[in-house]
Length: 372
Image 1: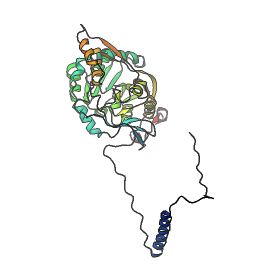
Image 2: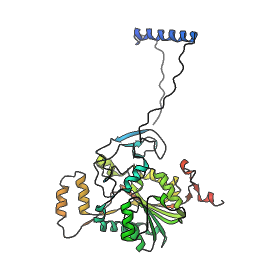
Image 3: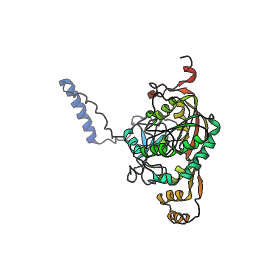
């Protein structure tokens, strides 16, 4: 990109293109301004009026830029009760999706206030999730295997957005001391009462202040749902011991799938507020005091029936017919689903985020705090 100046030169030949009417208006305007200066009747400058703010419309959470371009208009009707469940089939509905012209972040704008988003998740009940629980357990075992080499043995582990507690149950069976935080009243109660997994109802800020730091924090497919993902990463940082591990998965918008599918990409949904790229995710991690150790595609292991139900919801031809045939199989058929549009990250805490400096996006390095 280059900048070229435009130079205007005086017309030296030919007739003017300005009409006689415009010439006369120019003379009369100059005369009126001259008269008002003599008589002191010049108007005072008008007070600047603030630009109207549309409720919920916000600046970019990453770089603060107010300048955005719309990618997709709001589509469909929001379904607050159903579209915020983990197994939601509300793929036909999403908010207005924009891209920041400053840093490239793609996000839903406007958004509901954070308190309303949290209230929606608190009301979630998701029986379909339990109907596919064997596939979930296979998914958790697969991805725990992928990060196991980065985890200390018998770690003190926190999961953010622990839902019904099955990942923590898998981790507990491998010797980890586990605790979950989950906003859904139904899901957190299920984890406590059915699996015996200790779970706090709410977010990370619902943990008692005296809670000891954790060796490991995990969070699967959660960051894109949060009203302020950077603030959440900073909160997670403060809950980890120095050198602790943070493992999570989230959307990768630069992947070929969203580019190819456009508005048919299935993760454009009401409940997804942010669509990160790997570059932006790494920038957020560095800002929150983390160093990236490992990145790979996240793998969901799902049943063929569940896959076909998703394709049916997306309007894929004959998917409902195929689902009927799959229902006749003698046993569930499991399908590993990994397109690369969801990435798994493993990070190490290398800095402390000061609670007062967090709003300015400043992280204090571990070396800088050693002398305190």
